Image (cartoon, rainbow over all chains, first blue to last red; front, top):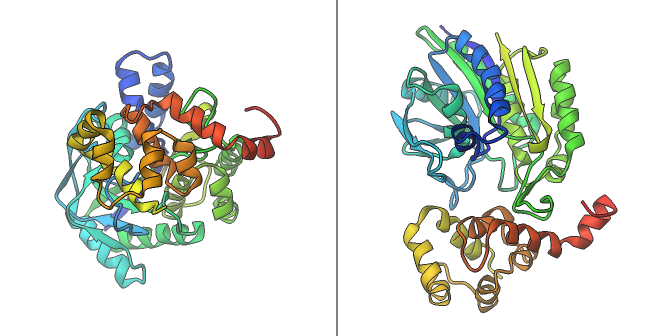
Length: 273
Length: 100
């Protein structure tokens, strides 16, 4: 049977790959944080990485599914930033197909995309965590930008359904789960910082999320991640829902690695099984 | 204001290099040819790069910032940020009680 070998969470600032490549002053810190997660991910030896991400109006615009799984052989990207090295990503179409069927038959009406591209929210994290083509990907899109957003409780339940679906699949497969997203982040909206087009409107919310993650208290996180709270935390703060789906698929426990980057409103974390 | 037409234009800017070239070369002509059609108010606000007012009227602020990212309609990212902060200065003061 397939088994889940760990849950992981990282941000996807589109400039991080070029900053690291170009020797930006923050490059050592960015590399250290991604390496902190990558070490645990590599040690888990996954065959497949299920990536939870919120499309930034690139793949879904005219039609916007609340949840969607990519069922295809490959996908390229980043579709929205040519400053990130472009790549073709191998997908695990078999697992995606079977997982999609298990979710729908289990009562979760997840949409399916059979032809897709990835934006920086997938390609950015893969750039640091899976630089080679040795791990196949299954993308799961969670609508984290265009309201109405799914509730945190529904996202948590989706995670549990994904865990159940993966563990019922035939064949031997090691499956890791990756959430891509921030906690408090405003991009281009009213709450941006002076001199910037981005901002962190609610640093206290980031601290609270990190506190709850460190304590392994996901139930409280789900209860506190209301739509109102996410809206106050910024127009990209719905990305926390990607983390909550991932957390729903693993045991509630303190992470083996957790570090925030307050200036950006996000965190890096690893829960190896 | 249709909102969706503005959002769609900004979204296309990211993925349509020909549209970016046209907006840089002939902004008014390009805006008036947009599909779905922009209202006269939307055309004028876009030509003025008034992203704050467009946001106030309901356009998606994340998508609006793509105009500044690609240096269109007299915008760049710092200008986008300044105009957005200025439009929402009262709300910012009410939320945070002072400059931030």
